[in-house]
Length: 302
Image 1 (cartoon, rainbow, N blue to C red):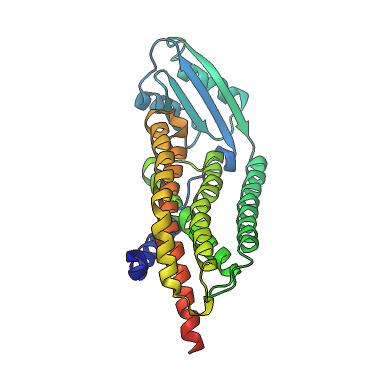
Image 2 (image 1 turned 135 degrees about the horizontal axis):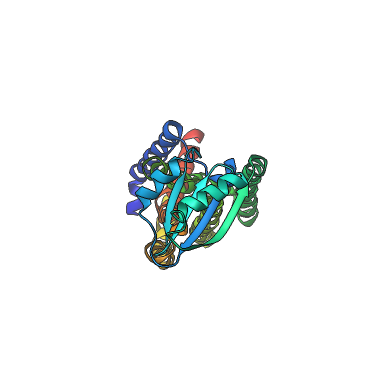
């Protein structure tokens, strides 16, 4: 009952984090990668040792390719992201990377994406996120259709979407900070991370909501039930399971972040933060919001 008793504090913490995340997004914005704005990505793997990243960046500046991002990968590789490259510019870049033939390397990948492809990808990403959210609302409303008292079934779906927005907004705010200070770019892995967070975080919320539903069914007289006590009891029965399940996933993701390739570090970090705040919202936000709505309904009747 501690969580329900201090529900306004936990709801306030979540609200503050979401507001800060939105503020970061509005002031700093997201730096989009070539997947969305179009451009070229070159992957190279050196045979013996790779050149210094700072020196390489200065040499590439002489080609006037605009903003170029150089990311180390593994012990001997680099990933270079830039605007679209012509064949001549591509050849000139490879010449710089080889230091006029002094550094032996292999070009392991080269992809060029036009702006039209990036716009299409943006549109499909937005549609995917909207459809997933609508599907979750419909599923929860259907699954809880027989729960009409003291809180109607559609409100469970509404609260689930609020918690999902919370679970996505805070990791996005974190990513905005990484984008602003460390040059992280929004790419397709970012969209995959958002969709994964939507799916994983809602599962904990549904488990706790289902426990509330079962405990309500066991009440002899639903009209006289103390809803906050039922929710508090349901949380006590569920939070250990939710935390342990999420912790096992977070540990795997942390190993991916620390020991995985550079290209997936931000992806892993997004999932870690999404899982953490998803678990937090299931326990400290979704259930207190249910109680808050029930109290508002009771006060409205008076």
